Length: 311
Image (cartoon, rainbow, N blue to C red; front, side):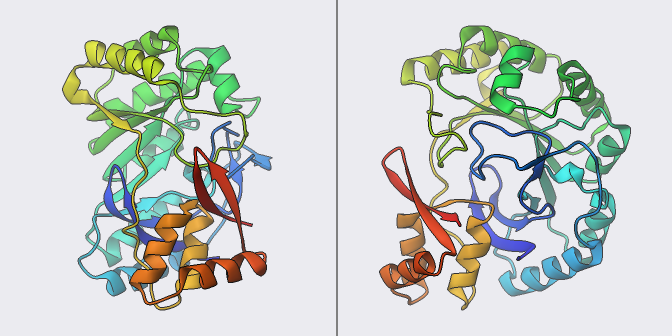
């Protein structure tokens, strides 16, 4: 498996080189909307997955290839990145091979651990997921490890934002009839109002979710939720993630393996993949059909679009 993939277009971070430091799928949550499917190993035990030097070598090689066409190196793996006990060592080694800012997308579930907070302080940008501050809703949407406690997590986030000197952003993923309520909007925005951060993104699922019944909220519910956030936090603090990221992916000459490395962590709309394949001189129908026939990928339909997933 490729530990480093992309760069891929990110709706928050521009051109982002992905670092996949967790194999599928070790996570502290099994979120109902997760684009990678159901978590097979829910855990809160930090351990070593990959060699830090190996990850840094892969980053250095890819950074050299893409030259200046890069905004961030981002830890966005097949599970929760802070489960990696080698996280701090890996970040330090990556900083030796590139001057690009380093980001991480975390579900925040382990921030009650002082060691995790210390590791995250090494990043230039930290994005934390916060779908609910109400225990019942949190359990329904994120389906956490049974030993996790929401209040401890919220206290850990509050402690971290006091210590962190980089850019801190949040993301709230809204699912229809689960956490898109006025009660949840008021609870989450009230909690965020006590923190120091740069931006919160109100998002909807744009890729096929773990559970087939999961849908984005209707337009009116989304508008009400967004309005509560704007009124509580200020319009400059709130943004939305409601569109797909586009097709401006980077691939090398080995287009089939590059697409595979992307879809293992980032399901790809088939029309975007087709545009990508054409841009590099390939036949989209032939390439995609070949990958499906070999059992490397599968096609799923969500919200009217066909997506390529890892098989």
